[in-house]
Length: 128
Image 1 (tube, rainbow, N blue to C red):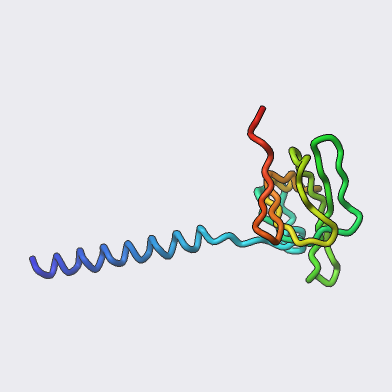
Image 2 (cartoon, helix red, strand yellow; image 1 turned 90 degrees about the vertical axis):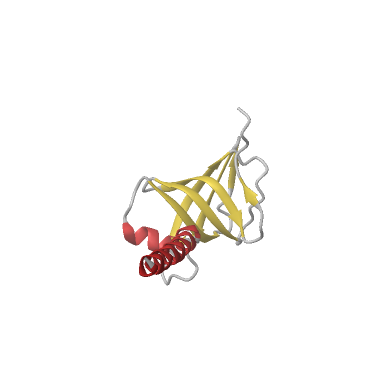
């Protein structure tokens, strides 16, 4: 009986530790670089990409902002277009580092969220 309790206790502690490790690994956000995404040749996937906005690439049209980000650590400076709908008040600027979360369709990222290097987050309004 006593050895069964020890085994159950050890099993319980192991399960708790395993759960803790899994939550930390799954919960930690890893941002992919533009060059890494291009190498994978994936389409229609959810991505979180980090890159620097290309100077002069930001355009505003109605409620849509588009810009190009590039991987400034890549020798080829690979780039990708980002389209963000619902960003009438988004404060992106030439040359800043952003994290873009959205769907990559093989040509551009349709962003649902844009984060700047500072703690600002931009999301479309929920009003319909």
